Length: 240
Image (cartoon, rainbow, N blue to C red; front, side, top):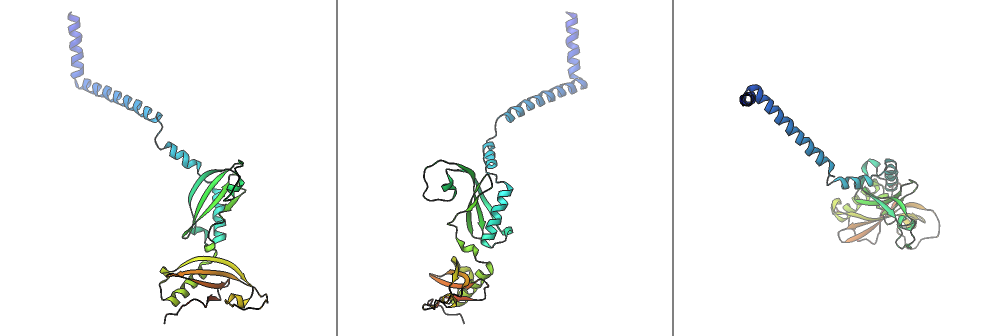
């Protein structure tokens, strides 16, 4: 009985001594860390809510080589410097057959899948859609994409400046709505002649339509930008 009382006193004195307090705090800290490790390991074992989204983004990742080819094509087709182009959307896709991959509007139900991507490129104010296959052999631009951007910026600016001068409106209020690359048979046709000879002396250029208020003005412009001709039927008066 005496030995039990002595042992109890020894334990009590140990825990209430400065050394005992330190030991108690150390044990408490270790236990707390242990629980923390268990808790962290448990949380780490549970999939995070956004892990699926990350996988989806990774699935949509476009190989750099394909991205470069698409941007090169967009720059060549639009005349816009590559540094001004931006890929804004990439969607991993399984196209049902070559017809669907080629932007066909009416396709059979034949299943001959092509793995690839649908890629959207920002070209100034337009969005161009491309299809690219995983073999990197085919990169196709949606044929419905407006050819507006094939008009060099210098020519577009000159046409808008002319339309602004004639209409009295601000350039910011004008808009080029359509451009069509054209080979005019001769200078007479280029100048909107209604009765022209059959002489073939081609002029390479564009037919450009500009929205001016509620009207559409048609211009002819040659590739050198040395001649910009407004359709004489347009009722336009130059601003004095």
